[in-house]
Length: 358
Image (tube, rainbow, N blue to C red):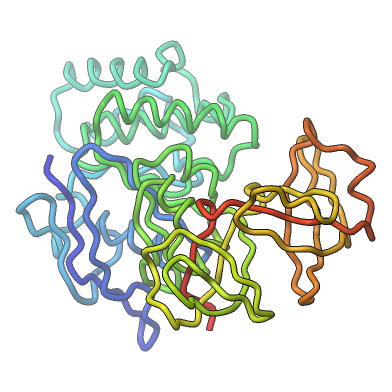
């Protein structure tokens, strides 16, 4: 299987553009995650790839083969749905065999491939059971086996873990990732869950309002967001408005000079400075040490969440900065609202982003 390419693909329903001029390559054997809020176009993109939704304009290629107008049954894609979509009146083995039988595969081969697929997802002893006799996690494994048994050119996962409880989601996503790596199947994974995308994907595609905001490895996109939307959607970020006054130097609206990783913005450009709450250190007022960036303020609120405490700090400018402090190192007594503090963070953890919220 070669790469999958979307060339200027758009989808419109009347005057509403759901996906706009999408140019995207899914590399052979990689797991690519489409991440974004509801209505951003990610599920429509997956369904255009599957052939369930017609393309308004543009082309989709599987390697050199143009599949834009091919019906779904001629694309050899395996699909795992959000709600499993198992046939309730069929046994587990019959569910997994269904796609092979529709393709006219010989009975002996069907039986062999069903056994192989069930073993792949560690469900070999459940072939005679009905879906209602299985847990949610087991049903999702069967749905995955049904998608994989046809040996698809591309595996499509449409929010496959959203119906599972939090603990089970952790277990099943590990299993899906392990299976995908073992089988080296090209996979497109649609999700709105940031943790799923960060832990499972080789690359992320963050979408917003039908367009791609940023593409990159999970680490690249998280550590180096290019727009306010990406910085705020993937994890959380603090923002300060101002100007880039020289290479690597940002001047906030109150005149404070702050350092950031240089190389993104040209000087004399209005922009936003972004930095993650977990990168910030909070100290008694005046103890900035050798930090590149330091601002003074006072604590206005704290939110305890078990392993960490979220601290809201009001700056002299009136802006509020969020600090995430691990409770293994936090001393509860110095987080009292009203206390004067200094927040510091390194330039390496600071980026300039464009403001796509306007």
